[in-house]
Length: 216
Image (cartoon, rainbow, N blue to C red; front, side, top):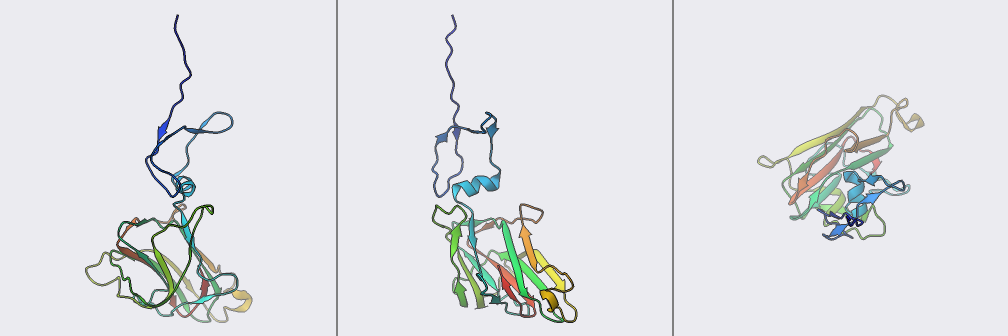
């Protein structure tokens, strides 16, 4: 006679998050019993590793610095040693287009880190899982007036996304240039390349070539 028993499989967590620790856990399944595996984004979202930050809220806009200058980023992220950042999604909403101005946005990162930028407004970082604290370890500032250029020779400075627009006469009619979109998005989950930014490093967003009011 063969003795049979129920077998309860366990899986080992290989990653830790704000609310997790290394341990074993039962595998997840749908209601019909099919084993469920979360994709990398949902996995980190559930662990509390996905963070977000708003720059400009409600109807309060932020003015960009104007002409491109690597030492005056519109958004500056400080990533200290021991922290790794994967940019997943960044949206820029232009509140008012500027007549006869070219719009140029650049997302970049470098292995340099300026911890004492001049000027700048601190921005609150939140957890996309709202029952957990942010715990990001990074600092995000807007309206920065001066940093040591991350594009300095010898740094690993990389521009990984650009958004561009050429505006003709009277673009403000209807708040757009003949139907031109005023929302630009970087999306690593869609088609844009996602860098792995290992601290100590910094990431920057510049918005030019003219002065534009924006949300991010």
